[in-house]
Length: 263
Image 1 (cartoon, helix red, strand yellow):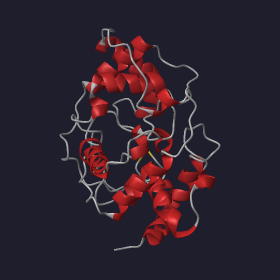
Image 2 (cartoon, helix red, strand yellow):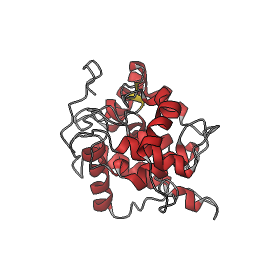
Image 3 (cartoon, helix red, strand yellow):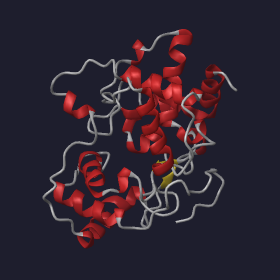
Image 4 (cartoon, helix red, strand yellow):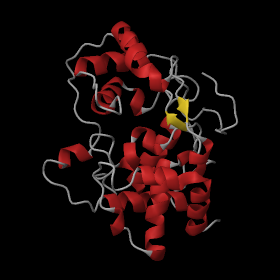
């Protein structure tokens, strides 16, 4: 079994440092300052957990079944306001947190669960626990859970959503929902994740349930936020892509960057 230090060094050698710096203190987030990560051995699990969130493909090769990352849904390594932040995840119950992490691995990444005592699982626990030390204002607290609210009374229109997808989403996520691959030196996987097809999250994933998908789109897409969608547009476009074909949970292909991508 590799030590945590060896795993971290291997990830950095594969290009994780570039991705990590992209989610540093200059990026708007709800996390504590990275300067608060303990030095030496005490901080290694926290640093590894953060790297796993950003570079899931390279750090969890035996468990990630497609090219998605934790940060595909939990933006900026789980620190973005209304972006699936982990800052207020209740990490006290380690068994429940492990079950939730494994649900993501199986249902969203079409992979295999981690053992509760696996060093990678312990690293994710350590990282999420560190995030929980953030001191948030009362105004920030509601932004630290989930993707923000969406009006449940809105009626989805998938046909209107298809037109919106072609106009506003296809540039990053592909004309056929295939996504855009990251440069190999940045860890591989997807820069912009697929929204349907063989490499997308499974049909069982929460991200393919309309309320969650619409809330994510409304509060996070497009990433530039210069032309944000209305709530109705978010519901429409989400209703379009969640209705497209998705693989069954846990049955996705074993991910290798050199593999052909099926959609």
